[in-house]
Length: 193
Image (cartoon, rainbow, N blue to C red):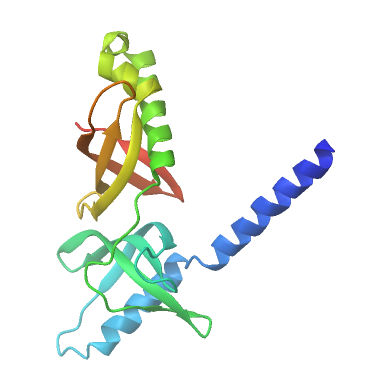
């Protein structure tokens, strides 16, 4: 019985991973889509736009058949992170012309797990933090009920998101701004400095 459950779980994870891998463009494919987009502009001034890094790609929260990639780019003297919407056409990835494309933030469940892990790590590292009431709530009972309005910070590639926090036993909700990094397909909570 355990072997059957393990085999089913493995097959499910493997097939989900294969689907994700098939729907995620490589850095070279993203660069090819950017190059094709630059060529379409037919500018009299030659432009060099390079994809310098790919933090990751996810299904677009705005358009069902699209993928959005969080990428670092260099265009002359302008470096920074942006969201590139892409779609597949005949086996090739092509860029989609849409300003202000959104990159989805983590789900509330993932965000609360990240917050708790960070708070526990901080309390283990810094004994004074373990005495702080809010830090203890963050590590144990605090809930994140929604994440919205995520915007890419051009300089770092982090997502700054509006979150709504709830602490059981306390009246009301808390509106806050949290930052997250998406790296190699995984989320990381980025604490304020």
